[in-house]
Length: 176
View 1 (cartoon, rainbow, N blue to C red):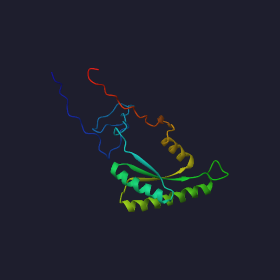
View 2 (spheres, one colour):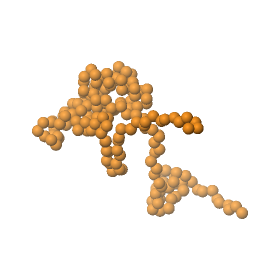
View 3 (cartoon, rainbow, N blue to C red):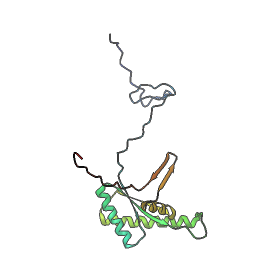
View 4 (cartoon, rainbow, N blue to C red):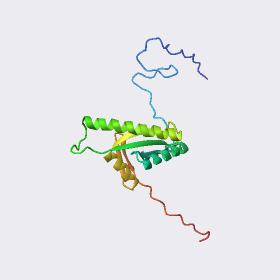
């Protein structure tokens, strides 16, 4: 036999006072002390690529930035234009107002160079800018030359290594 259930009453109106316990979207109450499970958004199998370009004001760097912006439009990638700051002499810890001013000035110059490149290419919405310390930039460039780069965060550790090319597969003749 089937059981007859009366229709549920709609949840409280938005202008009413909350009842003290969470409700689901359809108005049904959850058990006190139990919260709904929050899932992380699904990511595509393969993330869109990132193109990191060092922009130092030279004509070669400007050409690299133009190429990266065009390539980002073609590949649906993001360009990260980077300006690299050297450590000030005599202060290994950095800091101070002089370092903050240098960081702001480098960022302003970087933004101006990126805006100029965007005007030349017409590629909008595919760029970000960052001012990095020399040590961080050297770690990234060392990873491009084969060094392991280990990124450690509260979520865990990740190792970035160069992909080892596979040897070409040998085909065997049938019946061999």
